[in-house]
Length: 184
Ligand SMILES: [Zn+2]
Image (cartoon, rainbow, N blue to C red; front, top):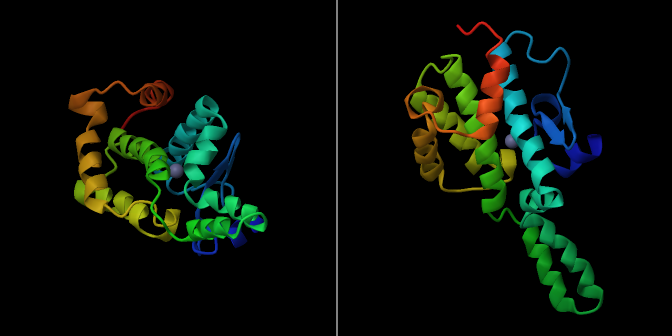
């Protein structure tokens, strides 16, 4: 993890704030995890559950999609055969990653759902703004610059549990787990 934290130099809070999932494990910064904020803990674990499930379903394609296009930098090793391959070094730049954004969107849709389930969102707009911010800042290496697109998409996914009743299998699974809980 320390190595990963060096690699993720652009994310200063990697070790002390972020939860990292490397299939099949979830690493949390400390235990007990978010003792004073159980809803946030549930939301985080449910979000990571989506990643684990996607990874299980997609196999290494998940890793490829998640790291794309920065992972193409490895082709620069072929530069020893033909220097044109060194152009692949440009993939290290913070080029947006629609595939990482898609996978994270699936995770954050779950985050949104859990907060909604517990009625824990103080202000919808602030909450959507907070999620969308992760897509445009360094948290995930500037993966998706179109913040309003993310916000609008989240808006359409809002009230998943309420009026829309969209049938999303992982949300249904989490509802079944939380169902044993006393919903407030
Ligand atoms: Zn995530």
